[in-house]
Length: 459
Ligand code: TRP
Ligand code: ZN
Image (cartoon, protein in one colour):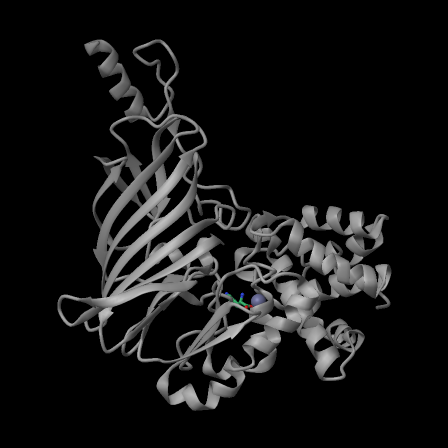
């Protein structure tokens, strides 16, 4: 038994498969990345998360975050060790199924080695205790994301890789999970996150603990936190969906009218896109200077003040169906998010602004910026949010509409959202689905508009 144990230790150090004492083959470490074409080290292999429970206490004066993450997951292989993505911060300790686990950190890989190996198919719970001043993540395009400090609090946004700056997780869009996010902050501040607020009450030190719950699956890049001085508004949409909005106090009155339009916009989008996928909705408006873009954070998109206009609101609300419920399988499929959300803007302009979608198409066609690469194949990570992903993505959808007609296209918008509701989908899933609804192949559309290099002769 002693020799076997020594062999196991050596094998674990080598990170390979080793014969078990009983004769079978033991587990191996889960992969440190999911081989995303743009972010190969994002996410981790060997397990599938079903739930995150994050308990976060934030001190806005020092910018200090104190966190406990409880992660419920299922092993998809026999595991001797597993990785989580976490950047910065200090890990004080971790457990797997209640037993202390060995912790190792290298770059943004946090490796946990449980005392007992995990069997394929087993559900297990990980806890990670961590703390520190979170450092934003810098994207390949130079923008910063993650946990961003504000003068009175913080805003956390995570597309595509920022969530690792504030909680350990499987930070790839293909592993969606439910979330419960508890925020402890000074009682004078408001603390918002995704989903519905399930409780809020005073705790020690003049602080309040507020618990938010996002029951439907969410990709980690859509998790959000806003802590600071906000004025909030509540309404109801679609019969029973609570709409929680917030704006930094100096922006509250100027943004109230547009925030109040959310129920009407969602009702119209629900007619076009099918049932709203989540049990909450809303919007948060922050001061300019923090974020360079609006983001569709699940149920609670966030807008810098200067982007809080009707078109951008329509765009971020459309993402709740396209992006948040139907989520890209990998970052290569990002045009499925941005093309649909941009097309939602064109549909809105067609219906309310008397600008037919064919005119939006024509102006996108004429713009050189939209022709630098095909939407299905951005050249590099820094191009994931470039114009072709948005407007050429929308052009693909318009070409499908022209080919199949308005009635079938309407069916496609609803059917796509229904078929992959709360799931992940790839470009190939989309082309196959569109052809199944069209009842014919659409190669001519894909070849030129989705995959083709450069602008064709004629629109
Ligand atoms: N996905 C956001 C939207 O269109 C925008 C966005 C997120 C973005 N990250 C970005 C734009 C990085 C440019 C660069 O709603
Ligand atoms: Zn978008």
